[in-house]
Image (tube, rainbow, N blue to C red):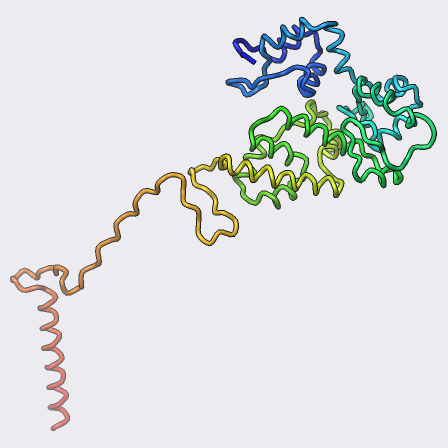
Length: 334
């Protein structure tokens, strides 16, 4: 796609007649293709992409319908089932939310794509009536593996499925290997991340590239804590999956380039017997200091008569010792 002119997100959303939330979701789902910003790093939209969407049949209603989200009550009406059954289907992993927000009571409100709910209702009519089976048949974005037990125990799969979907959408947008590793690592708690990434400079790079999984955090401390719980993987299977994914992505990222360091040096490879050679030549070591000469060879201050002072002192001490010995000997003979 030729990029002769690009538009900022706000301008592109205005020309596509989308609200901010609708535009963000449209870019995440790939309905609006974006390019990387040259200066700010923010995603931008090519003018040709905007024109393509504006020429599409049914614009703008068709585009807005593709990103329309609904809650439990409206979703149940769309599928012609009760809100209770809708919630049970979502908790068991059959319906995967695409967004969430906290209401004024700090309760989580999950949102679903209306387009996906209609497709599920037409494709799985047997799940809309009667008893729910223990094993989901799978669907768009569902995690069928391991959900058989969850459907019976009442465990809520919505947070896990939302995290998986959000990570998948972000990975689809990024080609940078360190950024992709940061996306997967963003759902692991700090202890898990430190265990997998012991190098502090690599962790700093991952934290710097860490995406905002849920933009628009609440202002209250309790609200931020509630959101943070939704952003962190807590299921053992989910944690194991993300740990394995992060390990593989880190290996690719390290082969591509090393994490930046203040002095430009590289870390020692784990388990290597010798340190890795640096990328840049090390300046030659300073020459070893010359050996100190023997004390006898050092110049000695002179006493003023042409004979070294130290020599004169030694002669004087010798004469004094001889005089003392002679006097002692004379005393003993008498």
